[in-house]
Amino acid sequence: MRFFFSKIWLLFQALKLETFFSGLRLRTAFFFAIIPYMKADVTLEDYVRSSLEQKLKELSSSSVPVVLATVSGGIDSMVMLSVLKRLSETLSFSLAAVTVNHNIRPEEETAGDAALVAGYCLQLCVPCTVTTLPKGEVEQTACERKNGIEEAARYLRYQAFERAASDSGSCLVCIAHNRNDRLETLLERFFQGTAGIGASGMQMSRGMYYRPLFNVTRTEIEAYATEYGVPFRTDATNTDNRYYRNRIRNELMPLLDSLIPGWDTAVLHGAEKNALISSALEKHAASATWKAETADKAEDACKAGNARAVVCREDEFNALECAERIQALYNGLNVLKSDQRVPFEMLRAIADGAGKAEGAGVSLERERGSIVIRKDCDVEIDGFYCVVRQEGRYCLPCGEIIIRECKEQVCENAFYAENIKNGAFSGIFRLPVVIRSRQPSDCILDKSGGHKEVSKLFSEWHVPEAYDALLPLFDDGEVQGVWGSVFGYPDYFVTIPEDISET
Image 1 (tube, helix red, strand yellow):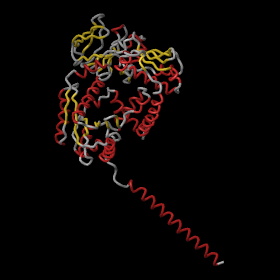
Image 2 (spheres, one colour):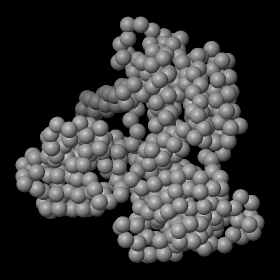
Image 3 (cartoon, rainbow, N blue to C red):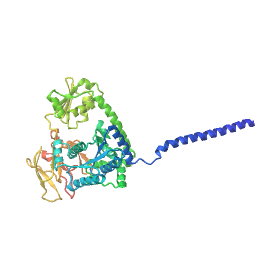
Image 4 (cartoon, helix red, strand yellow):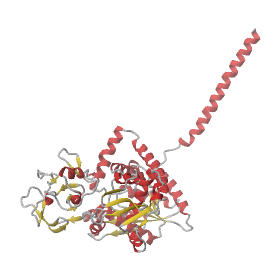
């Protein structure tokens, strides 16, 4: 019996030892597993070094590569310039910089930005190209392209980037968009109903353009600027919440932070998934090929962007799944270079088998074994865009107008417009202002302090489609008024400070 209990005791001790060593093995494995994570936090510079080193390897240049930094003078681009300079020796690349003075803000602001960039580049021993656009060039380009001041400024800015890249022999052009910028873009496009690859937001790399701060937060950028004493200038309009993008940045995103912790990571992951799905969708949709409706000269017109119609074979189109057919229609609109936002309902109708759908200046039709997308020759789809900086006469689709200063000084810098033909007067506004046609996403302040869609305002007034692109909107960064009385409709102007009443 004693021998039996001795064996039981020895077995118990063996089990205890086994448990001890088993636990020791687990603890040892855990210790070695967490060693990589016990080192110091990855810094902004570490992150940029890792991603940029990989990008430069992909370029596999036999000579010393030249990297061009696009710098505005704001905190994001100035920090990017500083980081790139610190990495240029260890990663063995030459650094150059370019800055663009658009000449659309007061001279002391735009010239000050360019001077700051040039001075900091001199301090860092980085060659810098300063491109100054002639006054009025951005506005003129906006009138020609009919997509607004911001789009025109971006178009001219990227032209300057490409010239600077060519002159410096750069293989890579770095832009300072960061994680916060990506989130703002994704939210903005979500509320616009953007689908497909556009809903995926920015890409880290596109051609020669590269975003080294792609996954860096603005908080990290601000901390780096403080630690290394990076100088920068702040655009006063960044805090002006009359601008749609600023409301997303300054009001919506902080609200989401407080209500839904982790929303930002979820949104970015969702965008990455959407990009993969959209890429596959576009690949399949490409099997429906689009051509100009007739040959020879029409093909040239299509390439030039002034073709009136494009076609694809109906059997190729019908062979696709519904989502692929909708993507194929978007591809056709891109080939046609239609600059109007076509309602999704039209595309869905054709994808589901409808014979014809019309609207937004185009018609989509199943015709003699083909899918045909045509621009409507009878509808003026270009709209209008007029920059007003001072009193005087201006020509609009509604006729010639005169801009006059208010004789009764209800407030400083108060003006109104008069239509010469019918004597209609607008509400009161300030200069400078852009008078333009309505865009699909336009909103205007309502009396409660919220925002009202201009399209709903037009619906309430029963504005026919023929006049939709003719009623003038007054825009100083946000829509301040709609001049309806010029065509016999009500006026809607936002009250401006100092007790100017709404008309």
